[in-house]
Image 1: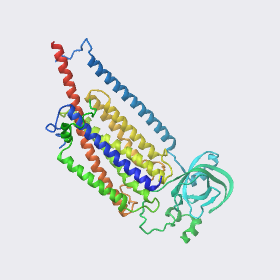
Image 2: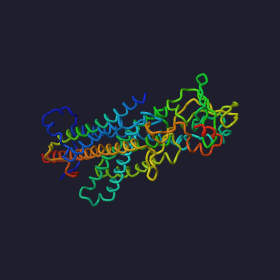
Image 3: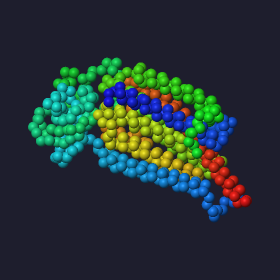
Image 4: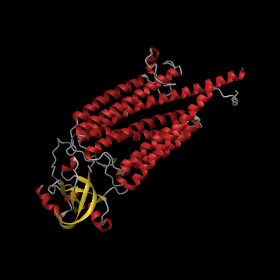
Length: 49
Length: 184
Length: 259
């Protein structure tokens, strides 16, 4: 693989992986929140902000 | 609060228990795979990690003990010694002023062309009279695998740098490299 | 169960702010903005290396990834230590520390994975090989596998308190490998180069490259912090769901007994 090819693959995989991980976290939060029936009025964020 | 066990098991409870059981089996299986992977990595590491390569000076001292054994040899490629002899790359490497002649039989990595690049070669000592920059030798290193060992020094292409300059550790102490140093 | 089949319902879209707060929205904006500037610096502004050429640009993702992973595992170890020391005295039985440890470890594992992947690509163009079992690479794989094991331990069905204690002990034991990974290049002979930056040693990276590396590390820190905060909140939601499930089971049991 050429230098440029390596850089393209390396940066793309990093960006996509972090993006997918972030999206997975947010989606999981939304789905569990819905499952247990809490909306934005009762957030799990109280302890950290 | 009554938490006493029930005598009758309903379908929902059974379903939940089966789910838990299946989850536990999956986690145990994953743990087993991880332990095997960890063990494999540890064994590989213990085998190679402590002495990944021998430097040229050490390999010369240990030559009799090493005999025909395969090992990894490390040294800096001396510019001007590299020639291509019908698909075989012949060159000399130096470490602590000790020089080894190398015959490398596969394609070298791209960075091999950089002057004074440190390389790690896999192969064995082979009997054969050769001439190198430091005099005559009765052994050369026959290598079939080369790894370029780049340093943690990063220099911009925009900066002025003598690409042919001899690294300090080589130039300061090796008498036989004085001619090369003066040339550069 | 969570299956995502009804992700597109209007109520769900409205509740997309489940784990977000104004603070994390600001942090997300900073992280995305910093990442775009980082890409500009790393891929266009910073110069190529005199030996490696453009391959040196892998430095700006490879090195910050492992620094962030070290930091995350360090946070896991600190919070696990605090859990062990304080869980008896705290009203929440140390659950806050346990959540923080779990969130940080998961982020650390993601970034260790990225370090290994980017390192393999970089190794192929510089060393001429994707992988070698030298001390640095071997200990990094062990670090990755150990923390995967830690995450697996956290998923084992058990009483939350017992599970948190087991996880805290494993986190402290696992952290021993972090300095071993970092100093492996000094303690043993490795194909891997020495550390890019070390305390008390002059950096061997010239101007623009050095500052790009520092900026990349800062960007990765913003991203990792955002991920950790959100992951923490999701862990809290998971706990709330489990507590809800338990209460529901108790209610069902009670109503059955009263019949």
